[in-house]
Image (cartoon, rainbow, N blue to C red; front, side, top):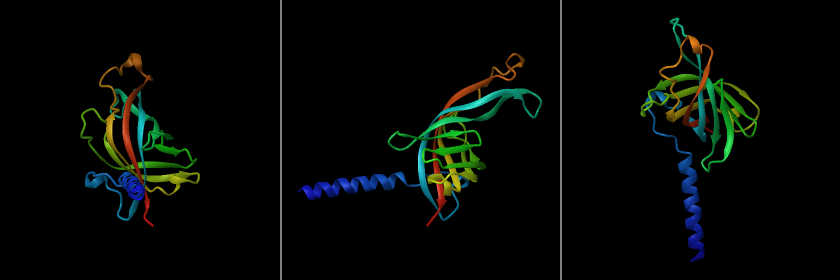
Length: 173
């Protein structure tokens, strides 16, 4: 009887581990290249930072400056940070920098877009050192304010709360 209980517990743990490593359903333009394997999934909570500046159309607007977020694993443990670059830094010291390859409107109103990013640089050795593709999905919040950027606020910064899930992919083995 005890062996059956142990087997059920181990089976449940393996099922959860496999579920955590299942790539999410996303629009086709946000799918990683064929042959890449999901190596890490994290939940980010923090802010999208905007500065009141002159935009390319010569009007004052909130211009995106960068993210500032904590990265948590499935158990809620803080395992890294996300900041301007965009850069993701893991607690093991590895970092990956990305650039946007594709985007899709977020299904939730007021949320920043979902993204597919391609790695452009790495630092350190660890989990993120082999990452080639990053997805940002399940976004909440983060859009710039719709008002408040005027001459009196030129140069001001504002932090808008956001959360997102990031999926990191590396070439399959």
